[in-house]
Structures are given as C-alpha cells and as structure tokens.
Image (cartoon, rainbow, N blue to C red; front, side, top):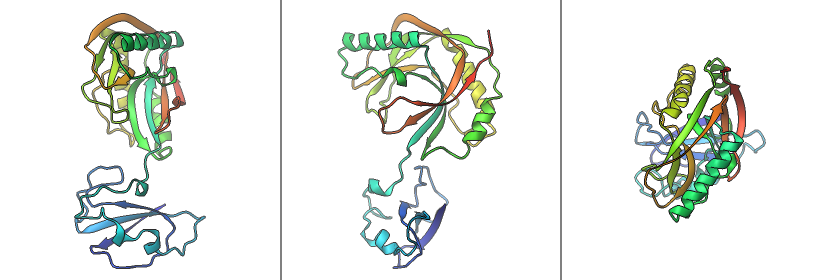
Amino acid sequence: MVHVLRWQWPIEPARRETECSVQIALHFNNIDGSCRSEVNPAETILLVRFSPKTPHSADLREVLDMQEQRWLPGVNSSPKPSAIINPTDSLFFAVLPEVSAAVRIRQLAQSLRLKHALRGSPLPAGQLHISLFSLGNHVGLPSGLPAATEAVSQLAQNAFTVQFNNVLTFRYKSRLSGGYPIVLCGDEGVIGLELLHQGLMDALSRTEFKGTRKNLTPHVTLLYDDRKIPADRVAPIEWSVREFVLLRRHIGQNRPYSVLGRWPLCGK
C-alpha cells in the first residue's frame, strides 16, 4: 500500500508513523517518469511504502532528511538512484523462432559480425524473438495481467508462415545496450505478424494496457553495435508460426526470457 503525503515548500520538520522504503517524486514527474502537470509546482510529493515487518515508529526525518536532498525543486541535480524504485520486469507478447530457425539466425548474426568487423555479440538463442505488443515495465507482475491474458485467449487467427530476407540497422541506439540494433526484417513474409499484432491490439483495447503504439516493424534483433551496417538482402529464413507467447524480461539480468503463457493459433 502506498500513502501520498504532501508538504508545501519549504518543508517543515515533521514526525510521521512510517516505515521505511521511501520514494520522492518531484512535481514534474510521476514515478514512471511521465508528466504530472496537475500537481502544484510548489509541492513536493513524498511516497512512502509501508511494510508490516518494519517498526512503525521510525522518524521520517531519520528515514530521509529532506533538507539534505540536493535534487528537490529548483535544484538541477539528478535524483539519487537509491531513492528510486526501478522496474524489475518487462512484459510483452511475442513470437519465438523454431529451433532450426534460431540456429540460422545466430549463424547470420555471426557472419554479419565478421563481414562488417562488428564488436557486438550475437544475442543468445534464449533471447531471440519478434515483439508484438508491449505491456510495459513493472516492479513485479502488474495486477491487470490476468485480465490481459484472458482477453488475448479469445483471439482467433490461423497459423502462418513467416519469412525474413533483409538485414538493416535501426536509426536510434538502444537505451538498454547503448548500441544500434542490427535486425532481420522481411517484406510480404511478415504480413501474418502484422495481422497478429492488430489482433492483440483489438483484444487488449478494453484492458489497462490499451495505450501502446499502433505501428509495428516486425523484426528479430541480431545484435547491438556502435557501428551501423547498410541494408542488404540475405537468404530467406522462415518457419511456421503456430503460437504466440507472453515473455518476461528480467531487467538488468543477462538471462533467457521467461515464458509466462502460450496461446496456440488455429490450424492451417
């Protein structure tokens, strides 16, 4: 449970029956970094997360000395990382390559690495996927997840064959890796993925996860690198898509994604 306490600036010394994991959100940010324009700029918002195992007699001034924080309103310093609860899980619906296709994708990534003298390493087989619909980043699993999985279980689409035959570099560097994504893309061979993406959007439109991007460039990320490579045609890599999955990426951990659910597509 999270309690929101407000003070007018400057903050006067106060004692509160609290516990102790504390988080500060400045007036211009929500916890997730989005705009909080409805908050009075003269206010600082203190969010205190309570735990039944922690003594409730802690002095708020001992938990976090507000006068010591150099990142309060009017100061340009960035907040201390230790005062922010970072997301632990990224959730998204995706399609996974068949084992034989994953082997070929890894071989292609390695050949591009040698051909263009790239330094980035090919992604592990356990991380190869095609993203279809993001449910966002969260601390643990969101409460609305059961409703989302129930909604997508009603989706009806035939199985299809996907084919990728191009490689290219995305324009912007990844915020996670710091490198340019070098990806495998397709032409007409990715139409089935586009239809599946649209189906997921329609199914999730009545859930809390409806607010996501509407455009999709189906791709498999091969590796990340500081250098870009030119777009080029490659030998087609294809497989039959018979299901889609819900993946859980463990943020900050270099480990395979966890599969939280699988939904079969209709026979073909």
